[in-house]
Amino acid sequence: MTTKPGAGLAGITAGETAISSVGKEGMGLNYRGYSIYELAEHASFEEVAYLLIRGKLPTSQQLKVYIRHLMSLRNLPDALKTVLELTPGQSHPMDVLRSGCSVLGTLEPETPENDEYHIADRLIATFPGMLLYWYHYHQNGKKIDTNVSNESTAGYFLHLLHLKEPEPLQTRAMDVSLILYAEHEFNASTFAARVTASTGADFYSAICSAIGTLRGPLHGGANEQAMELIEKFTSPDEAQTQLHEMLKNKSLIMGFGHRVYKTSDPRSNVIKHWSKLLADSVNDQILYPVSERIEKIMWDEKRLFPNLDFYSASAYHFCGIPTNMFTPIFVFARTAGWAAHIIEQRQNNKLIRPLAEYTGPSPRPYVPVEQRVSSSIQDS
Ligand code: COA
Image (tube, rainbow, N blue to C red; front, side, top):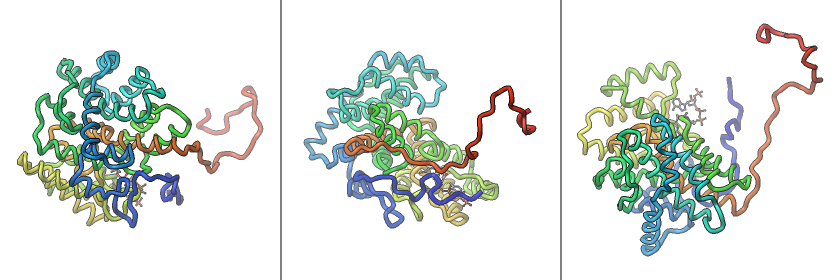
């Protein structure tokens, strides 16, 4: 079946934004005019979150205050902890975050005092704790204290996960990963957040819509599926043979391709570099070489390039992160971008309500139920 031009809104400009620009001339990514390369090289995730949400880079004093502020917002209300304890231990962590966000919205609803900026900061500060409180409670029967003193969100997450001070290499790799995942224009989850915001709904509802949208394997869920693919193979040669088979069967290879980028994803080489450093640090001889071989085959056979999700998978794995937490990490980061977009949408709001091309039956008379006869085998 051929897809029509514009299907899935491909190629359609659906609104304006001053937050980021994606794929101009087929590549490149800027947050509020700053290149992702410079941000990934020099900035921290907190600096980038401030830039996205507040519209400008913080001064060093503003950054210090912002980091302290985020740290002060990490406590979880008791009622939320109870809900996390009652949430089944085998739930998908994305469902835990979606529910946790919703519960926080009932405990600390949006008001003129508890405004959009404050809720954005609160969610960025609490998402890692929410996830890991639930995780340790169900995995190890421990009620962890989520108020640990790491300044960075990256270090905070790794500390709560492993319950010990994280290594600097892993912390910086995570920090860079959060920067790369923080924002990406009108991707599906951000668009979902904007649609919800455009109806006048509260901030938490818009974030819940976004989390639900991010969960799918064609969007954020791809990093988990990429990991499942990579770890199937015990050598690059095995990966090559199997991948040829998969491509022959027209399987979708997760972590490859992109709706907007046509020649490469500018974020991929950055995370690939960090994945290599982490691979060397754990003396990996399999996952990274397998990943590189898959990348080569995808390019040779399909001219498809890895997107951010592909090398994020091995990078996270080398940090000892369970695979089903990969997409939640995307949530920690993208909350900054979602928040910026909800705020921008509200500043110049217009209900987002497009039209559909109708393909159903022509108008026809209603037939009362007792007069209806079955007209096909399927009806009987
Ligand atoms: N593996 C194998 N083939 C792929 C592919 C992949 N990852 N991505 C695209 N293709 C193929 C499609 O099968 C299609 O081939 P066809 O023309 O023979 O039917 C062609 O490339 C165009 O793909 P299409 O699905 O129309 O592109 P899209 O813009 O709708 O999709 C994605 C973009 C990201 C959804 C798609 O590339 C994909 O599903 N990738 C895997 C999931 C993923 O990594 N998501 C994270 C995105 S950041």
